[in-house]
Amino acid sequence: MDLRETLGTAAASLAGHKLRSALTMLGMIFGVGAVIAMLSIGEGAERQAQASIERMGLRNVLVQGTDLLPQEAQRVRAKSQGLSPRDALAVKEAVPGVLRVAPRVSIDAWKVRSDLGATSAAVHGVSPAHRLVTEITLAEGRFLDALDEVGHAQVCVLGQSVRRALFGFGPALGQPVKVNDLWLEVVGVLASSPPAAAGAAGAGALPPGAEIYLPLSTARRKLATNPLASPYDELIVHLSEDASPQRAARQIDELLTRLHAGERDYTIVVPEALLEQARRTQRLFRVVMASIAGISLLVGGIGIMNILLATVLERTREIGVRRAVGAKKGDIRRQFLTEALALAVAGGVAGIVFGFAMAKVVATWAGWATVVTPGAVLLATGVATAVGLASGLYPAARAAALDPAEALRWE
Image (cartoon, rainbow, N blue to C red; front, side):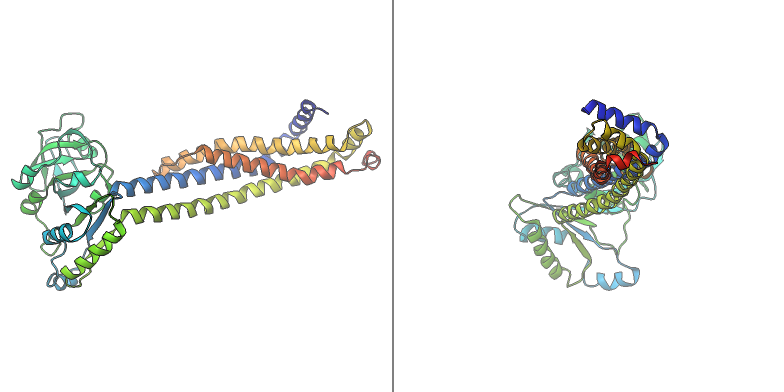
């Protein structure tokens, strides 16, 4: 039997039992689909986490003020005023490798509106150095500058979603925006959602780009803040290329411990360490998810083996006839292996389509980006083919081992 005849015989055999073949392929379809969907979800999660952490700045160390309960706020503030200009100056001067320190303060914005609409936004007072330590890019206008800071200027820069909510498709530059009871003039619009580090505090469940930046001095002087809160909510410490973020974080911690009289009213975040931890977690996640999905492939392979063993019994007389007219053991073996591979490959192709569909459903329903990589498709298809081949080996060997004389007498 040549290859064409072997393929034709296998196709005819499977077509003669359409329902049984379709049910057998379900295990492979679900297995391949699960592998692709799981790996795509893991890949999407990893890329999303890495992008979020990288936007914090891998050359940055973030010092964030902690929220204090009312009953402990007065006790702590009696010894430490929290993150303050003194801390920013001390870190800049005392810690080796620090290029600049960018403070940030968050405002409880209960009203954000323009003449055309209203929205919710995370409002931050920042210094001009903020743009130098984060990945902020502008679509229109300019960012805050030193003159705005010195003059307590009533100006602001909007994120994209705030701009759309307040002005739609109309012009935004030069337009007035009211934050609580303070009117601000729009001088710039961000090109995309700002770094996670800049909007992590107070952003809550707001969508990307729902931020407003105004001068730090304006926020502290002209907008109400909690008197027991830290003067700053965050210090973004930007390091030189040869400085170690881990070592700088330890030095900053030691310095602030002395300045705050031992009160731990701050936390230190090292994005570089977070990124490495996220990578380890995602690697483990992918291994676990792929292993779980691989069990489905194994079940599918067992289903193929079971059906082929039943087929060998059903076609015992046919095998005897083929052997009697000159078919060799290798021909019989190839025939059943081809049927096993056909089931696995057909199930794998359908599983790829199913996996893409599952990934799309997850991305749409959960709002979680999924990434289907060529590697995931090749892995799932390769494993499905290998499982199909392995599942067909024993039935094929059993069929080839049948005695022709006994097979011809089989009823």
